Image (cartoon, rainbow, N blue to C red; front, top):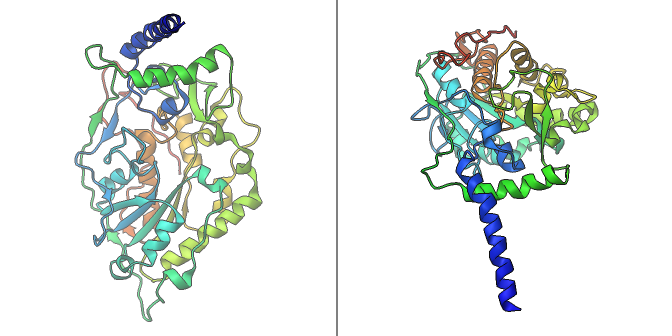
Length: 388
């Protein structure tokens, strides 16, 4: 009995090795948060155009006691998340913002609680930044945005406070390094753990037609939106298409909570507030899907309906750039911006800071594409689209 069980186990291990080892040797290391979360092959969905990274980073994880012109509270669109194995400072819109403007930029984890703690801290009272930027992902608005109690997190506005003079734009003109995605190398130790993880997630989907996972592969109506090998499909979070995004009453409640945060930040009379809602990938590419969602996100429209809320609209501009032929605004293997999306966000923020009186001389150009082109790869003549 025991010998028979041992033979079954050995055969099972041999079968697993026969499936996993060949796959492990040809499978690119996971780089995108959606390929890893959903169990999709990085070889198929990984971008083939290079990304950009500043070495050393231009923006930094905010240090207590340090002075910053701009303090950003952000998530994975602005800073590496703790669970991201490939997350590195130097490749975000915050770095491009510093490069374009010369502003010193510190980045902290987003959320009402960290922001409330900062506004109640000696750092904010003694070294207030010129602007606090709160960057949220669109999907975060599905949950209530906690407002801040002004009486507990702010100091009274001093009498006679004058509006600070705008800071002059002083571009750094740093050229980022190209960052190529890691590829499978037969002579390196294969990613066996990732191969097992991919099989566990992919086999039920492929063999049993199991659906309902956190990641969806959706067909595109147009090829060329992404540089990956999967030219006519891309990956999206399933929650990108939830109907709450069209609920205007809910979004107006979220807007009121965000306005309370703006009031708390600006109560000192020195610091300006800017809200940056990063549109979800499904929102930007909704019109390019072969089977588009029945309704479109109303987040940007509802936020813009209150002209006193200092929010940066991004969704329509990103959609226009995609329609104009700019590839990889979002990573084909992930849910966040690629290089072109990061740079577009930085330029849009810089222009908005000019309108708020934080900056003078901000570059009005909405052009993207900053890396040198690669002959023969189709990216030597990037399409440039006017978006505002």
